[in-house]
Image 1 (cartoon, rainbow, N blue to C red):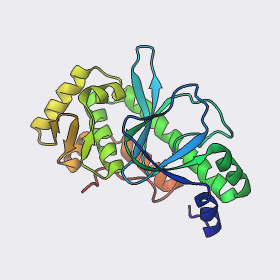
Image 2 (cartoon, rainbow, N blue to C red; image 1 turned 90 degrees about the vertical axis):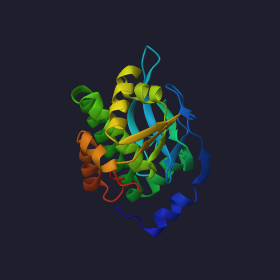
Image 3 (cartoon, rainbow, N blue to C red; image 1 turned 45 degrees about the vertical axis):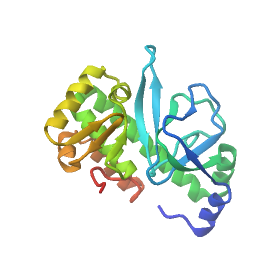
Length: 232
């Protein structure tokens, strides 16, 4: 969906550039959301649901195809999930109050965000189905492929215990899977970094959930979703 120059300028006038760091928390559950953030380039954010045992399980990974913070609701409402920075880098941000005024002034921008809300919901739906039906191995491969696609880099700054927490499984499960991927020549691991060296084969190990979400994005917001396994 293409915006007119006037719509783009309206957004540009209210956007601010910023750099956010890996591990930075934007919102905790219950916080009032007063700014919306747009990842740029390799930057990646994620929504994480907090569980009673203290784990934070990821429900959606957001790269340059999307935004976090008040993009669905109208007005400043409390956050339900934790919003954190998975891969630091450049972002644009805008006050949610300014964004709501812009939506009211421009039906095209309002429709654009409504379409993205539909795509984000589809991603969450698919995540729920994936967690309930696919193996940890498939899910780990899917997650690594999605991270590579969004950052545009084959190296992911991620400890195995962080990956386990994000996936909502024990570290021992992830350690065995990472070990198997290493033996197969799909990845290499050094302290705090997982490097994907064969994204095409790794994608073959994954479930089809990334592809299904990408297909929906292409139908609703063509050209925005970063396809899997395409990093150089």
